[in-house]
Amino acid sequence: MSMKIRLARGGSKKRPHYSIVATDSRMPRDGRFLEKLGTYNPLLAKDSEDRVKMNIERVQYWLGQGAQPTDRIARFLESAGVLAKKTRNNPKAAVPGKRMAELAAKKAARNAAPADAE
Image 1 (cartoon, rainbow, N blue to C red):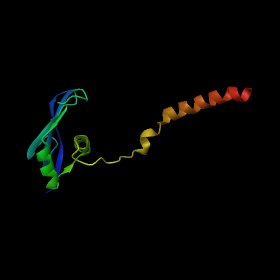
Image 2 (image 1 turned 90 degrees about the vertical axis):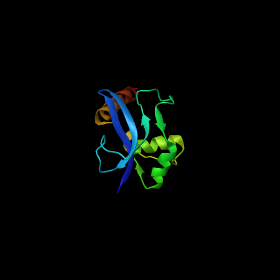
Image 3 (image 1 turned 90 degrees about the horizontal axis):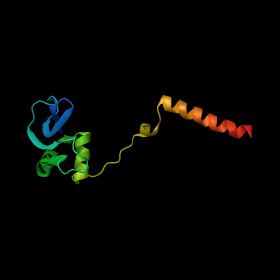
Image 4 (image 1 turned 120 degrees about the vertical axis):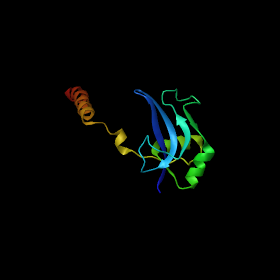
């Protein structure tokens, strides 16, 4: 059985509230889970203590049983010091989109034109 530690959404429309749960990976996002491990409230300030609450002992138990955390949960665990920090690489994040590349090329050409005229 493939286990996951992931978020299960609750709350109403435009007011999300998530539970951190240990579940079988074949279950639906908001479906059946084995254990609730904590909560995540994205509406609170990033420095708020209540934004992410986890039962670290139970999380470590499930990790020991072979449960795989999702990307977001892995980041929470890294900030809590449970997992080692992982280096991430997204080389496309720094590349501008097509429209911004066109605008940058026009701006560079415009700035180069007066220098050539002198």
